[in-house]
Image 1 (cartoon, helix red, strand yellow):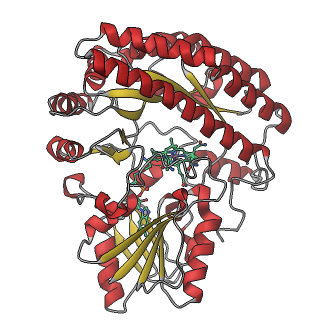
Image 2 (image 1 turned 90 degrees about the vertical axis):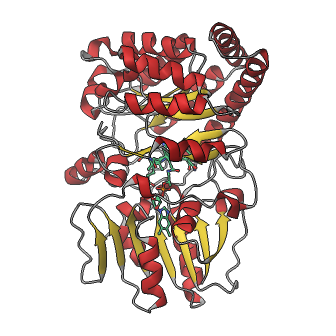
Image 3 (image 1 turned 120 degrees about the horizontal axis):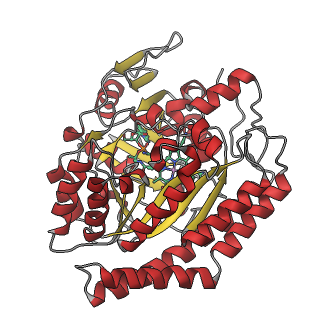
Length: 473
Ligand code: B12
């Protein structure tokens, strides 16, 4: 069959045409049923959509940031008689409205479902929903194929990255899926489960050895947790032994730096090439850390000590020769505009890039369920759907703008870059060439981050809502 796989994206997406990350979902699906003829369309890099193309089926990957665009593309193909399947994180948490625009909706991880779906389609027995989740699913009178076990990651297919026929700034690869921390604003537990599943080290290393540039390890924390420290130690030792050690990025938590074994993982990650960690610090407000469930990630037992611990742990990561950004969620009822300013100041003090986001409840999260129950969600606001009478839109936009201007001033970029340069000189295993290459890349990363954050701020300041308004029903 001829199949078009499309990553939907909004025209105003902050990442548009910057081409930073290779979307991994499409190559994974193609790898799961490689006997078909695929064409990839990445709307984030403005690939054109050919509605007249002779394809048998269209598969759309839909994230929260592109729900309207995904439906417009789906409606366009269906109007021409081409059947459409929608999957991805937003389809997984909003399956019923996705179904109004698709012949079938895929909920959860696609690899084990895609071959079954294609077989059903070829036999003209396409079901309405294909679900990979242990949670019961109500097909609301439609037909359903459900796998109630999450996939064994030893069996994930080799992703067909070659089908993109073009390079991205960062290849993407993953070693683990799932997260048990359960922050109230995060949909990862709903999407990938509350326990961590791991791929065999050898399979991950084999994949990484085939990548020829920078890559992004998509795991929810690349430093792992006490139950996965052993795994990551093995993984990073194996990566460090590869003949070509490419620099890579990942997301991380601070709690690893609270234990001896965790600190060892951080050091070995750096030796394996980790150059930049986007760290979910979430809040400097103890009440918010407690409320959201993010306290565990900070590794502090006492919320009152969280900021002091944050500073120590960030320092450890930076001393290992890793550039750090701090990701914060702000605007809970315990926060006010001062929290925005104080968070930005703390980032400057710690020498980390500030990434401040107003809290916005995502479907599929505990936070969304709570606000929905309380009947206080407002999906028409461009800034957030979270009601906080203490925060007006304009001062928030100004505080965010200030955090970017000051946090990404030339002075701050230079300060962070020099600090990295010095740390790399102290850490064993970095040749002078590595040091120059990593420091140059770090300066570029910081400039790129500033650009994306400015674009994102433009979106928040606009009248456009981040949240798609159609009812789930
Ligand atoms: C890397 C990442 C980023 C990167 C890059 C994003 C990018 N555009 O490439 C950065 C850091 C920039 C980022 C930013 C944001 N992100 Co982000 N990000 C991730 C992360 C960690 C990995 C994404 C990934 O590649 N996963 C691996 C692939 C293989 O998974 P997948 O795409 O879900 O695909 C699987 C299934 O969904 C399914 N599937 C997917 N598509 C299709 C299609 C078909 C036809 C089928 C059958 C199946 C199928 O099968 C695939 C294989 O199992 C996820 C969390 C996670 N663990 O996945 C969050 C996540 C995707 N991000 C999320 C969010 C909310 C954001 C932000 C809005 C946060 C913010 N406030 O700044 C921004 C938006 C940025 C933007 N403009 O797009 C949410 C999305 C929720 C949703 N409902 O869509 C997630 C799930 C995390 C969360 N906290 O809940 N993000």
